Length: 163
Image (cartoon, rainbow, N blue to C red; front, side, top):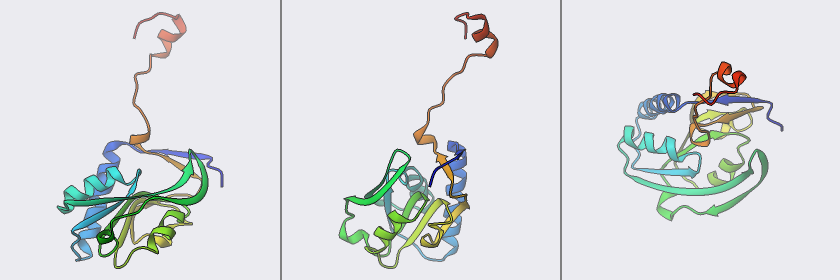
């Protein structure tokens, strides 16, 4: 699959989407005391969800499935602690093909998997998500991008050093 579209997401959008996810989680009526974060993408959403849901216990699992934008076979780099494989809230930024979650779900029992974004190929592996996006879209998260000043076009055209 090649990615021929991009979606840029701001910090404010991430926070808003995480608040909506927190509301959805609360509406399930189940209380979670532990979060299992899929690194690295799930770290920032997990921090926001931990605050909103008053969860203090957080563990990570690392499954490598990408080399920049190229998919590869999943490789388990860090296993979660045993007490984080049952009855946990699992958080990631998005589900793409579902390769990460297929591997992780085989280790989990009675857990709720949430993501901000879900793509069609992996959507069935997520219990709750905020937004469905097309399979060909590469999401540019704020933790992967930088904001920088850009000179006005007129200044560039004149070749002056002014900002």
